[in-house]
Length: 437
Ligand code: UTP
Image (cartoon, rainbow, N blue to C red; front, side, top):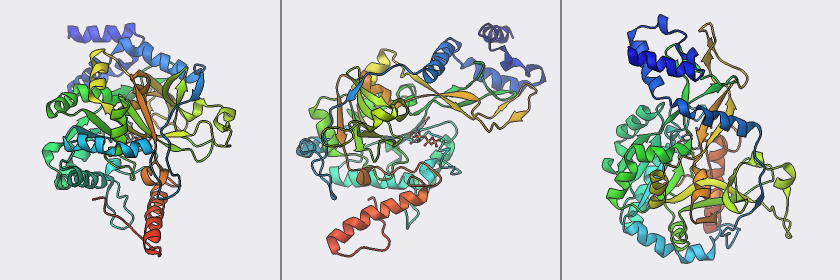
C-alpha cells in the first residue's frame, strides 16, 4: 500500500492526481488494473508530450529544397525504373538468395478511416476472389521464395487492440502456406492522450485512454520484443518495410535493394510523382540540407505549387511509406537510446467527464501522440530515394470511399492489370484479378 501512496504522490506532483478520482469506488481488480497501467506511464516524459503539442500549434520554420532522387527511366506504361536501379538488381537478388533480407509489415494501426470491423489486414480487398490483404502479402512472399530460393522471414507489427485477432486469423488460415516459424507477430507500444488542459484522458474509471504509438513505434518494439535479436540470429542485414494497406507494393524489390546497397544507404525510400500540388502525401525533400519527409500540411500553397523550368512540380516526391532499413542502423539507434520524435494530433477521443459519464465527442477534444517511421531518415548516414510508378506499386486502402476506398482500389487495381492484358492480347478483359503468387 505504501507503493500505492508513492504512485499517487507522483501523479499528484505531476498535476495528474485526477486519475485517482474514482479510486474509492473501484473494487480490488479494477484498482490493480489501473495501478498496472499507471505504473507504466513515464511521468518524466510528460514535458515531451507538451512539446509535441506546442510544435503542432506553432510549427518551426523550415528551409526546404528538393532532394536527389533516382527518377524513372520511362514514365509511360509499362514503365522502366531508373537505369542504375535496374543494373543493380542482381546485387539485390544475391542478398535475397543469401537469406539476408526480412520483410517487416506494419499492421498495428486502427484503420479508423476505413471503418472495417477487424484488423485492416483481414480486409477482403481482391476484386473477384475477395482475398484479404494478409493473404496477398503471404502469397507475394511465397512467390519471392520461388524466385530467390528462400522465403524472407516475415515480422508483423500489431497493436494491443488487434494482436489476438491477427494471430488467430493467421493461425486459422495455416499461415497462408508460410512456415509458422518464419512469421512473427509483435505488439507496438501505446501512448496516453492529453486534454486541452494537459491532463491525462481517462477512458474508464479504472483505465487511462491509450492508443498505438504510431508506425514509428516499430523501432522500440523491434528491440523490446526481441525481433532485432531474432534478425541478428538469422543473419538478416536489410529490412524491407511495408504497410499493410498497400495492395500493390512488391514485398521485396531486387532493384531497390541493389541500389540501396550500392549507395551505402542506411535507409531508403520509394516515392511516386504527386498528382497535383494539394495531394495529401508526405514529401521527400531536404530541410536545411538534411533529407527527410515533410508533411503536406507544412507546405504553403505557393510552395507546394512551385514548378521547375519544365513546368513540373518542384516538390514532386510523394512518399509511399516503403522503406529499406539496415539492421545495423536500427541497432545503432537503439544502442544510443534514440527515440523518434513524438507528433501530436488533435483528435476526437472518447473519455469520461468529471462526473464519470462517458462522452463521445463530436469535435476534436484531446491530443494523441504518435511516432513516425520516416523520422529515421534524418538520422541515417546515407539515404537513397527511388521513384516508382504509382499504379504499379502504390494502391493503399485508406478510406471508406473515394479513390482509396475499397471500391476505388478494386477499380484502380483492375484498370492497371486490364491495361497490361490489353497491350499483350489486344483485348481488354471486363474483370481481372492476378494471383499475387
Ligand atoms: P495509417 O496512418 O494510414 O493509419 O497507417 P491506419 O491505422 O491504417 O488508419 P487510420 O489513420 O486510423 O484511418 C499506415 C500504416 O501504418 C500502420 C497501419 O497499420 C498501416 O499499415 N500503423 C499505423 C501501425 O502499424 N501502427 C500505428 O500506430 C499506426
